Image (cartoon, rainbow, N blue to C red; front, side):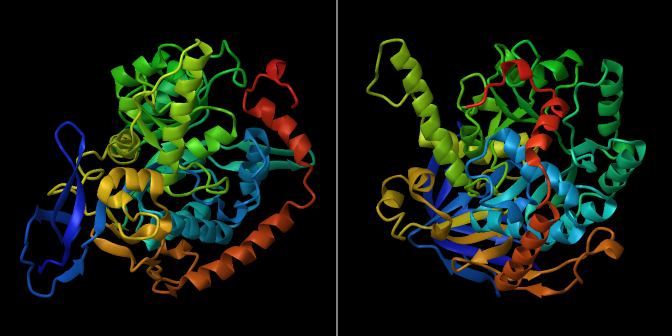
Amino acid sequence: MSKSQILLRDGIILVHDADSHVVPTEADLLIENSVIAKIEKAITPGPGAQVIDCKGKIISPGFIDTHRHLWQTQYKGAHANQTLMEYMVKGNFTGAFWSPEDLFWGQLSGALESIEAGTTTLVDHSSCNLTAEHSQAALQALLSTGLRAIYCFTPPRRLKSRSPFTVEDDASEETIARYQTLARGGPYGNGTVHIGYANDNIYTPAEDIKQFYATLRDPGKGRAKLITTHTIGGAMQGKKTPTAIEILHSHGLLGPDILLSHGNRPHEGDGALYQSTGASVSSTPNTELQMGGFPVCLRGDHYDNASLGVDCHSWGVTGIPGQMRLALQSGRAYEGQKLNEEGFWSRKPGGISAEQVFNLATLGGAKACGMQDEIGRVKQGMKADLVVFDGESPGMLAAAVEDPVAAIVLHSNPGDIDMVIIDGVVKKGGGKLLDVEVVPAPDASMSVLKPNTRLQWKDIVKKVLESRKQVMEKTADIDFEVGEQKAIDMLYLDRGALVET
């Protein structure tokens, strides 16, 4: 079989050394099929290779988003002035009204928005998963875009009542069997899409949850690539309530396949549990700051097991460089405020560097996904998941020469990305997303869109806006205030500490 080759000529390649420091290296990079084959000066490619001039460009590892609800494109802009409870009811629970078609277009456009911003791998906490058709629609969208992903199956959150607006989770045997069928059939798309499980109900009796996690880890029953859980501490959850990592630790369930999301306001000792068990945490700075919490990813006891995610692109910035920026500056603000409260100040930014947040989005993300031997760094033999920045764009000019990592973290935006390559395939080129060629769902009979359909971005725009109108109409008569009151109890939140501001 002949090898497909792409040669990136004369770029500044962000190579990690043995100590995880980034060493900008001027060289050529040769891709053969899906793998980085060589990084050296003056590579001579084979006949028929695609040669791309990268002079003045930065070649970065692809960015890894470790917590995302990818379906929510139609809600973008709706949560600008909302915090967690308002969002949960208006932007999460209302997934109970979405059709597989709504989900397909939200998922497809959300995935493309991620690719456009340089994300090459994503953990999808799939919270719109009502039926087998919904799961297939989400996977058809992912596979069609070519995004590398771990699709984390979530028990359906079904409508129980319109008035009062109430939903309930369905973790029945039938639901678990549906997950297991998907998991046993994966990975999909030439190994680019794995199946994981999202379990937010960790308050079940000890023996039940131990047995359930044993099932999720059983290869014969459909082993989950990751098991992910939302978690938050502090007054909302109740100061005496154990955090998720404490609960899972008490049952002996922590391990490298456990990924917790957010983890704000941790208890003393939570960081040590991540360190001792290999479990990971995903910080999502944009949503967490809007909800009034500081990301934990730059805490000394969390950092080695931390990564970055977007959470809900309906809340704001999708690009992982934007999350790096928010994490960096909020971390510095947090450290500076603590120092000020003690009556001191410093000439230094708290020892927090741009390289640290860059590594969260690359090395840290790969570790959190259990894929550190495949992705997260630019190295011979690794998967060819790469982002090429134009170092001479108005935003990157001069910064790219001074410090390429700082240029990405502090100066870049998606418009500065000239090319995105995933699994050796160009998905964005010349600064623009390439057209999408639709592939079948894993169960082709449940495909939302006919395979081999070719979609330009303008086609997707039309469908997303039509769907947005329809999903808003479906919930126009809902009393969300009453729904919030129901949700407080459903999520086991502490009413005694609730104040209205």
